[in-house]
Length: 474
Image (tube, rainbow, N blue to C red; front, side, top):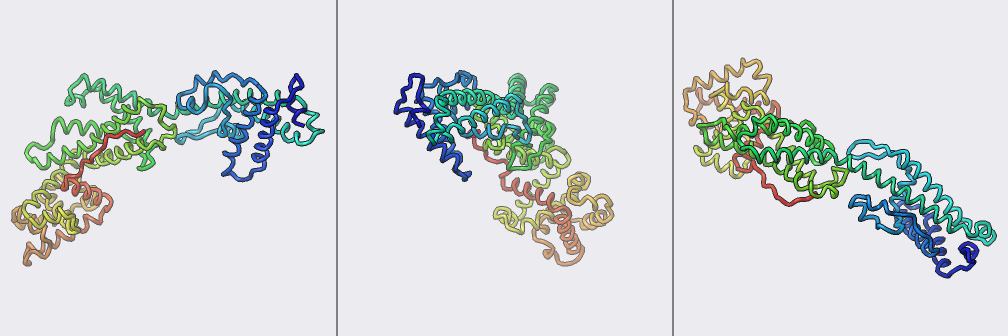
């Protein structure tokens, strides 16, 4: 049978050809009879290797693979520049007929020529399969005598045509999928050129810099939306936060309160540090874009830096963007630090992060508000908007505060010790009011209060600014 099937024009059948064809028959039988999806890739690989060996044994010239030189470096690593090099994943793609694929949430339709090449490869495979299935009996083999060379040649030609079109289409899809990263890199490069030409303190007022920064933030928002699988994936990044931080660094809002100024500087530095960290990634990844997975959420380095920046950006949105809110937060931290200097017990509570710290925090915030309501009203609206809208109860509360006539330091000491620290009278009654309002402050909008408490505690502990390593990971 094999002599009839594999004999060439000379009529001579070599044992090498018979052995290769027998391996092809065995490999095809295993592949065709397999029902386990887990084994498909392995058995398909063995079958395709047997096809290539049979063609080589028959001394058939492979179709030209010169097009592989036009593949990007990643695909060149997968395909040798010469030889057939059949791959199961390419074969499977032809079965799927490549209708559509989704990358970064965007739908891509394959070109009609790719689908046509897929159909041609499937027809060539059907001819090959027909030959193999009908080569198990002598009578049948006589009918297809001499067809092996043409069938294997047609299969290889169809494969090369599909491989060329399919991989080029994949490259085009991947290039488009990486385009937002490329755009962000381009904006960052232009920003760096401007930064080299101008003094840092004057950049925030440069219109060209503002426009480039806004463009970069838009591309970072687009990247964050599709790649940040560890965070919220918000896409509304704006240059306002970064510019506000730059302005604060150039012209601090606090001139007389060193503690408040230190907090303001740390807040802005945390936002700018994370921004610089993300820009550093853009600079480094520009040298190895071919290593970036087009499914952007699969790039660990990109994901981690986007998630880090998103957290810092939200910190900036809450406490930096609005100057009044930032002023209040910094003054609150300053008061907490002052309370530590007045009370060793409170200093110990802060150092150990005792639960009592979170009872004292709202009391001190209220004392700051009662002393300067016009300064802190904007920030307090985040926690008790309804109470601040009416103002009747708060007016009575402040009247009780003013009637005491106590110094601010005395009240801070009492607030640290709690409502049981006063021996009745007006002071005791006020501390009970303070405790009630403190509980209401925590319960009014708990998420906003907890966020603010966390930031204040981090400021007290000196841990607001994160330590960021410099190891680059794609």
